Length: 108
Image (cartoon, rainbow, N blue to C red):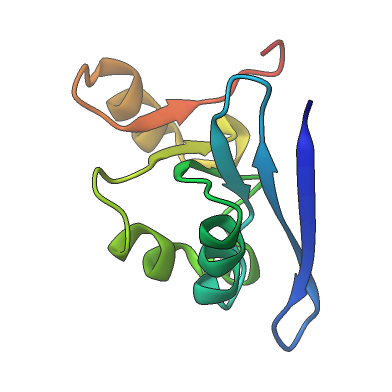
């Protein structure tokens, strides 16, 4: 069963989400502003956030990511839609086998 917890965070009321998948994998989508709130919600449920997904990289969608990542070991994988990246960053991520950045394709 897919579980979704929604949050409205920060001064511009950004929507953020915490998801637990059927395979017991947790991720935070657009971890806005207060990462501690998202992290606590995951911990209260016994979930470990393994991925941070961003719809785009505006300040209000990534503001809580550092607080979440700093609390996790190993670091979570990061997914960013390739249309939000510069062409140079896309090319570097595509070439890097060690990169933790996952390019989310439109057909994924």
